[in-house]
Picture: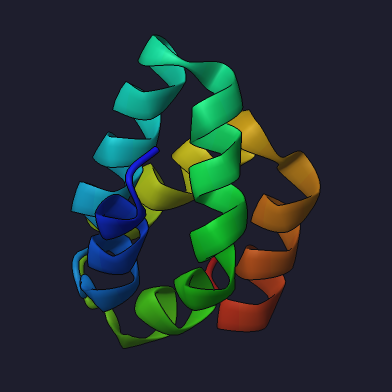
Length: 82
């Protein structure tokens, strides 16, 4: 996966776009999607906390859940999103 994609995810402030990108990556190459996820997952809690778009947050969390259930639970707890 190109490093630029991870950089764009880290810079993005829109959780829905990140979730959609993770979903697309999973559909193309699960291993590469997991690598991308591992490079960017530490930025998600802050993005969730600062977003006011419930739909976008839900999409991101669902995409994360498909890749790593434990991380999704941790993000919900850290961001206080339910």
